[in-house]
Amino acid sequence: MDIRKMTVEEFCNRVKEKTPVPGGGAVGAVVASLGAALNSMVANLTLGKKKYEEYEGLMQEVIENMELMLERCLKLASADVDAFNAVMEAYKLPKEDPTREEKLQNALKKAIEVPFELVECARDILKYSEIVAKWGNKNAISDAFSAAELARAACKIGEYNVMINLKSLTDEEYSKRILDELYEVIGEAKVYYERIQEMVKENGFTKI
Amino acid sequence: MDIRKMTVEEFCNRVKEKTPVPGGGAVGAVVASLGAALNSMVANLTLGKKKYEEYEGLMQEVIENMELMLERCLKLASADVDAFNAVMEAYKLPKEDPTREEKLQNALKKAIEVPFELVECARDILKYSEIVAKWGNKNAISDAFSAAELARAACKIGEYNVMINLKSLTDEEYSKRILDELYEVIGEAKVYYERIQEMVKENGFTKI
Image (cartoon, rainbow over the protein chains, first blue to last red):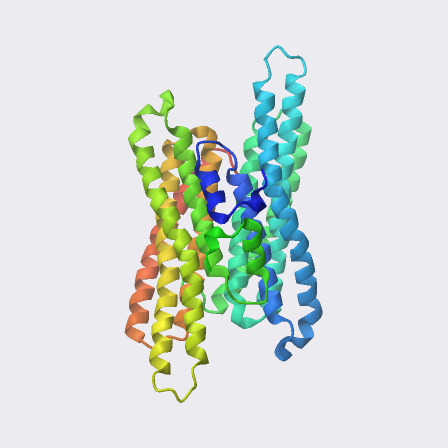
């Protein structure tokens, strides 16, 4: 399923139909891509402006990183569909198949690693949202704030999708390690998001 | 600009380029559409299941409402671009044009009303996310939670876009009324979101 080639309307229609894919995980990855794209837009609107001359190098870095990130997240959207389908395939194997359990556990690990990577991407997008909110074109600051909201949503969605697959995983050592790593990344994401929320308030973009 | 007919990749590419539209507002509306689509998916996956028989009518109601919502939010995405462009047009009028200020103020009001409507849509999507999380197919509960995260992001993005345009608006009475209404809707959205977050915890989808 090549999500990037679907129109926005087709993608919405594929999401809503009575099949579990594309579901939350794939949508979360598309939303992260849009967050990366918004960060890039703010950086692009900053380049070439006398007032922001000293941040030219920084904005170039944002654009390069968000280009890779956009690509990575669009791939994650399709990878999420593949990972889910592999889990479903394993569940469909006859119960007496001696390879069933191993295949299922391997498929579950893949279905955990894809949203885990989404959480890592979301953390990185938040890092760059803070950069463009602080040093980017002030006329586009609400776009930097919007990018942060998308990344936060993608981070939460990634978390839910890691957690749902962990429920069926039997490898306790792996589970413990993933959970430790997951909440370390989420903790970092939270710090970026909270700093951005402070800027939202300081700049008068909320009354609450 | 007909965003719904762009592919997901084209839309990302149009967002990232050095032009302020499509920006955060349009992206927020697309994200709300995806939230509506996910709610619909959960309802679709609930229909026809013996276990959830008593909620058939409720799920039909979700699907009907989310169908309208999806359509409305996709339209809002393009409306956001048009509203922004109209503000830019007004700014470009010669300063000595006696109609300039009135045109600008009218364009700003439109650019406030579009994201205000997005906030209202986001609140409604959250309401339906709670319904499908509570009474929908439990296998898709993480998709209901994901829909809620998208709606929360759209709500925040709508808020930022109302606020940025209010900064240039001179009609104080209008501003006061919009702010009062905005924070009433945001307050309602917050109640839905917080109840959903309780369910996230109760169902073991987060460790924090």
